[in-house]
Length: 219
Image (cartoon, rainbow, N blue to C red):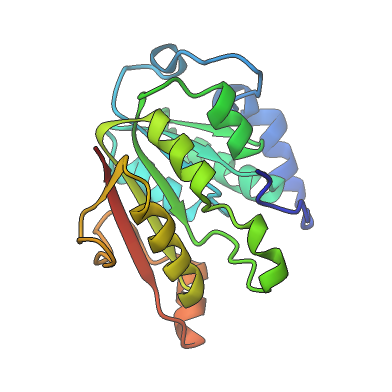
């Protein structure tokens, strides 16, 4: 499963410097070995994984306002990683670690089974052209993989502003027996209080896009 095309935007000097100054503190190096989540953070706590955090706006908010939880963020684009690391350092946060690697490989090799309290995937690339639909992140194989990494009772929270992709997401996750739709089969959830309206979402709303949230519980 490959769900992205690496189109690196211009990285600013400050974002590049973040890798030199803060990667040793916040970075999670990729290896084909399982990580010890308790050793990764200063104190054990429920762990939330956000895949594709973009510029880190939502993840920073979560780290500040859900301080009793630990967070792992995965993002392949270096400018967003650098921006988030600078923001984390400015707030002196210690409950976030960042992977600058392909999410599927991190899930397959580094995240222990049933170790996550929640997975959040907000506004993944919808790949709107039909011939590109196979590149979409939310596919049966990924949803099944996530079910092996989230503890029973844990959550999978998805959000998109692309109507056809929302329908695809709902069909895929509802069809996986390891996930139970909190809103009922075929239904979307209201946006929960922990998901803020990011700059990206606000732009979509201004353009007339709807927004759909899906919250499923691990059975």
